[in-house]
Length: 460
Image 1 (spheres, one colour):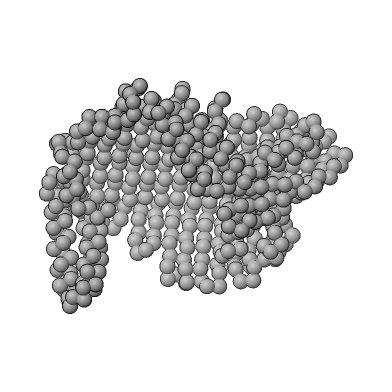
Image 2: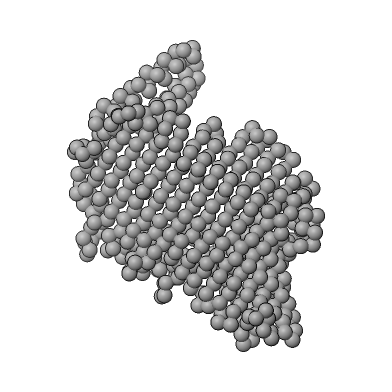
């Protein structure tokens, strides 16, 4: 599936860069265009203007884009048709950008594209400087290369950007991607959508507002179904809100159903919240990461810079008494529903030297898991351990003897888990509620020595 993936990556990178950039229309049009391309360029996506031919009411330009993803660089061209007057479509200007695939990729897609561009972005520039990006990619089906079967539902979308470049709102849809290779591998993605309604607060570099990614269905099967994975109803929703001098953020991840590896998981959910993050510290972290992204394409270097910036700003953030909460982690399996939640608050006094985790943190953890599920997990762990030992030591043991040994080990561990008051059993569920404050740990409302937790023998 290599060429199809490479082509999709090239198209996706071009779309993001084109809608994320801006055109300096007005005054010297050519200078504005060249400056815009320079601003869009980065080590990860390098852009070079090859030529710019001016006309009376417009111009035509070609740019070369180089994608540096850590492997072999990918080059492709973009043709830009610039119409700047007089009164182009009732606007200050419009720019039509069309992606031209590299020759080694283009050959494989010629039959499906039939001369059409794989991606087109129409940018309308208003008189006040506001922009509207209309993204489109034609749908097609046929061969990709000599052997790949490809169904591409196209791309449709619109992104609006304010004149001051501080607000962005829009939606991009990808209805269908279906890739099949001669080895029987099949990848299908249906109804992918990206929405955003973001704003950049005055004086800050970070963005606030909601954004969301959703996928109706995604599936992969290898070698005619010998290995398969299916996901239905994926959603990832994020939100960031500025409240005075602090920022509150959240991520809501959910999947209606996930099937793979012999397991079926329903209503998988994960909700994470960050509260009272200092806006100035977040701005400094954002600027540091942006600078690193502009200087190096190495992902590891960017991650290292992010961690370094966070640690540098940590004393400032702690003064805001931040909190992190895992509001909900849950999943429904054959045995029932398992759920977990946790929260950590920093309550240290401003001005203290360093952080004392024994007195400066307040934490809580709650867990609920079907006993049958925990028994199954422990049984899998014990069986693997016992079978491995029997095999390594060349012990002559029957299946019945192994089953008996596994059963005894499981019963012993379950008794250890439920026998010290840390985990309670009721109506087929195992639950625990832990609270930590001022160096003291309360479990299910009762004080407990933290060392007792080590005796639980959990399989994780």
